[in-house]
Image (cartoon, rainbow, N blue to C red; front, side, top):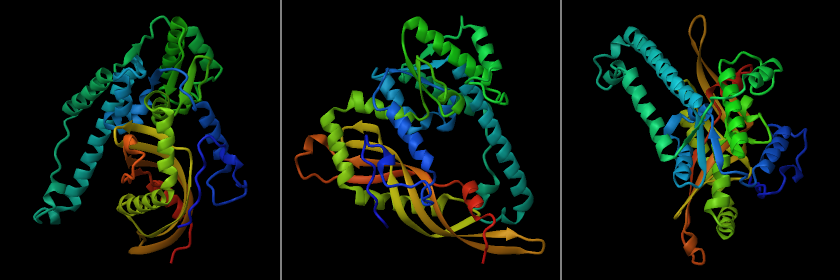
Length: 391
């Protein structure tokens, strides 16, 4: 595997020798956008943080490690977390919708298995697939809703009221197609607009500024004198850890561990990516012979820094190749197809260091693990192989 030195923290990625026509990089303009985003987030501008409903929905709700970590900071009063009543109701609505979607999908699966899997009913080991337990929508909703209540309580989350906002401001933005309004097709545009107007009014009334965390571009692209938009929880956790939880000496120590172990980190990431891509991409796609050619690192975020435990998250450009086989149905039979893929894409990686700052002067054993890596989606892989010549 080719080893490529990562971009040093605080240095603009574009100063490296990267040409716009280089095909090995996913997108040249991505570097500019990421650097501009980084420049906006090198210091904590306020301790007020609003979380959009999309953050909870996109993170799988309340068992997400980063949301748990953020709630801990709220509970410790390192920062103050905010929601609105509309946001809470929107989260609950999404919970119900997701549960109903799962119920529908499970019922459809049961029908197919019952119709096509009769031959397996008497075979030991297959019964658990035939007789799936019933999903109780009310009970399961109450369990997840309680997790929302627990998050609010543990994180000492405060609610921003929406009473008293100016409807005229919302209607003006709607007719002028200003953020958070887009093409008018999203059902949440008006609730989002009410949320934004509520936050603006709260900032004005309290002479405060606030971060708005959302993966929804209509919210994350919204800017004003009072609102700082971010699209990732990891970004705000990084700011909290760098400015509140970790002193300069510890920051330099973490950076030294990272840079001194880049070779091992590359191997750990390549191994984790390869195993996950082979095991999890799809039941219908058979992936083999994955070769990671090179990795290029972007600035890391400090997600957690506890005694003896450090978690970093970063984006990584990865060049890799692999072989993919799958079965395609034809008019007469099933045909086995094969394709060789050579791709460059961007993944998200999380690293865990087990090390003690107090022992930094000693020759301590430092454990390094790649605890998470994203992989390309099944849809991405199918797009890659679509139209290729198969053997």
